[in-house]
Image (cartoon, rainbow, N blue to C red; front, side, top):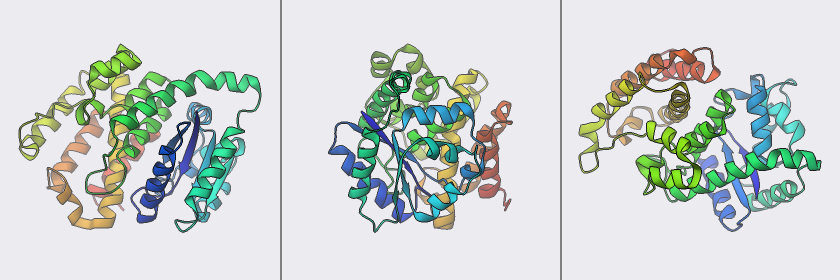
Length: 319
């Protein structure tokens, strides 16, 4: 198997959605290719941050080649000082430029696959990467099967973008691959036909437990709008009993959601909130601010800092 990383700006821009859907269709035609999306690079200012050793090494161990969407994004990445996250990654990982959504996505995909097939360097490097890469690819295939056909609420963005982004955020918090995989799976029990037993059978009891601990009781059969506050309060209360590793997944999930909320609310203004079961903006503010405060033990991490920053921008008129 080979893994292609896709670096892009906002996942919710029309051209990004076109590229994602096109690449997903192409990847279905090849049994040996996985896609790993890195959306929202520009908006969350990742390029200027210094590379965390664990995050950089883990990403490098998983991705064989990158597709970079847009000349502007490539220029920005290449202009970053040595030691920033993607500057280091691009120094060691081959990439293909997709200039804009009018470019031939199929050609860029084929070129990236060809580069990926030649990646690997020394036999030692191949052996070092193989176990972690194989395990994550198996998890990625499982998650893509589980979320097949699903899209983000009120959009045409493939749903799998959210769990992948959640796993990538978790990667900045820990090198524990079980936590990364559980982050990738965090919505499977809630939103797909697969259950905890399926996850345990394929990936073990620890990952199944981590996913279960971050799964909401959806109260199926009841009106989701009527149960929204009850479900959110239950999650808030559960944070007092969660382990640190379970809270990492919660933080990663909430940050990914806030990134989407920031982009969506900028694009659709007040109409954005109409897509949700709870349509009052102030209730979403209550939920995310309360969760952020409950996760304040991570306040020195870039993930929590970004979550706090986005809550202020979206709900508290800060910038």
